[in-house]
Length: 65
Image (cartoon, rainbow, N blue to C red):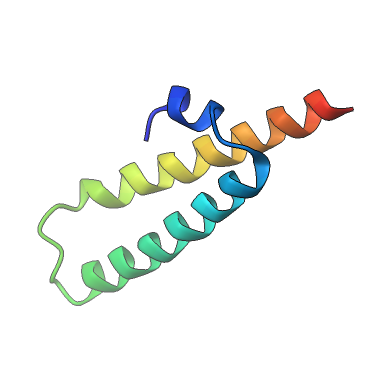
C-alpha cells in the first residue's frame, strides 16, 4: 500500500489496517513454515506496509498535539 493512500485515512482506519496486515503477516509466516508460500518477498512487503501504517499513525498523533 502506498504512503499517499495511507495519508488519506484517519487514525482508526489506520489501526484497522495495521491489524489486517498483522493477520496477513501471521498467515504468510505460517505458509512459509509449511513450504506453501510461493513468493517469500510477500512477507517483506507486508512488514514494510505495517511499518508505513505505524509511521502514519505516529505522524497523525503528533499533529493532533
